[in-house]
Length: 447
Ligand SMILES: *[C@@H]1O[C@H](CO)[C@@H](O)[C@H](O)[C@H]1NC(C)=O
Ligand SMILES: *[C@@H]1O[C@H](CO)[C@@H](O)[C@H](O)[C@H]1NC(C)=O
Ligand SMILES: *[C@@H]1O[C@H](CO)[C@@H](O)[C@H](O)[C@H]1NC(C)=O
Image 1 (cartoon, rainbow, N blue to C red):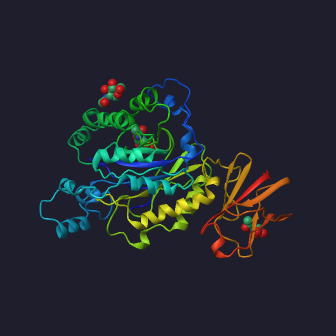
Image 2: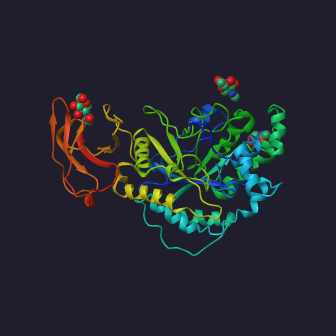
Image 3: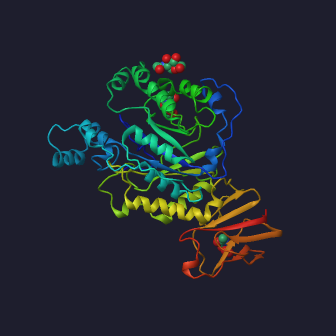
């Protein structure tokens, strides 16, 4: 377990992790005006964020790697075991593996034996329900890089990104540079940079989720040089999006959108695009066999976090860890499908929405607003016992019209000089209520 906000992603070789952004159906590829960026933060930070990212709102994050073989504790397994020498990790190894067993010895067991990329693709499509269907299926079952290529192919209308850790805990060249106080860049020139250029040229990702930056300044990582190439000359220059982990003190200050820390939740509307990344397993990003039911985030909490994040202008990136065989366990499937089911009713209030002038009703934290065009959406997390939803912020006009997503017909409403808008919610049998948690009121003709 880790204190909130602490870096919790892995850093080691052979970690090709990916994340996927589910794109709003109405989003179209829009070219940015051509201009050249110079390798410095003022220039790089001035690049407009490609529009698709803000419209996407929801993404699936995947941590899958050699740590999925021991599948115990967390994806930081190697570091906890051999970097820090935590006793419980050493005990786990003593109890389950022969003496002298190394982290690299887990490698051959990372077989992805049952990895069917088209099944993953179908699941991710279903998690973003309003997207058009995923089309025909091909029966393919390929591991390794070809499998990933097939996965990307299957994703079609889904944007995909790649996770990349700048540092490597135990790489000899990294350790050499570290010994030299990071005055030398052997690791960066021999490993990090060639790998990053290769990832971009080979996989043409829509997003690069950088991490593992925290021990060195961006000048050591050569980040601004890489980013200026990425934005000026790379095959993905018009559409690619990056996060903010490019060197010490960059996070929350420089780069593309801001992750700030893991599981970041701002207290008010930020003035820069941001993303909350979080994991269905509260204590690990990679799959672990010792996950308990109480470690699994509730569906209601996932929906509530999605809603709050989008109201505050953020994107929500929800993580799962597949097994070493390439399977996504049913509890993770269920959570992703629950998001898809909720979005199939309420997606109109989420995809391509913008923050409204008010983000939430101030005397309750259970009503959150978004907007799109002339519509304002009030998403409420608790159904009021008296069946009347009280909203203080919207100002009604002669053209005000109020509906609930997933329900036919207008809702009755009135205004009260003290309380504001009073909306009579429909009285429905449980089977007719459009969602289990969080319902959306659509208001038009309000200010
Ligand atoms: C940093 O990037 C520049 C521009 O691409 C390159 O000339 C230089 O060799 C790079 N330095 C390292 C250490 O990779
Ligand atoms: C990052 O910030 C810390 C604390 O303000 C400072 O000590 C450190 O020198 C900074 N690092 C860089 C690379 O600017
Ligand atoms: C806000 O507080 C007032 C006074 O306590 C109360 O009458 C009103 O119903 C509250 N509004 C909401 C939306 O809960």
